[in-house]
Image (tube, rainbow, N blue to C red; front, side, top):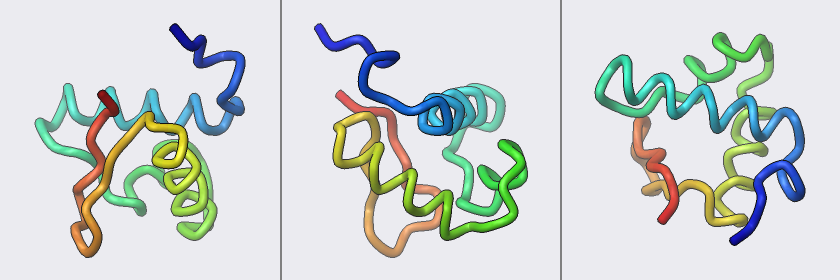
Length: 74
């Protein structure tokens, strides 16, 4: 079993935790703008980059063209 702390950056861990909390509280995934606002980033492109990294690592899955498509990995 992989340990998240060993291969995710602090920012990636923060975004993943944000997604988890948002889904629990709202019943759906946050948008990129909502993630940016929650974690204190002014650039949505920074969030998009981190989401791509999380997707490549298998932590989340997303559907192209969908605003609230982030789902927690397997």
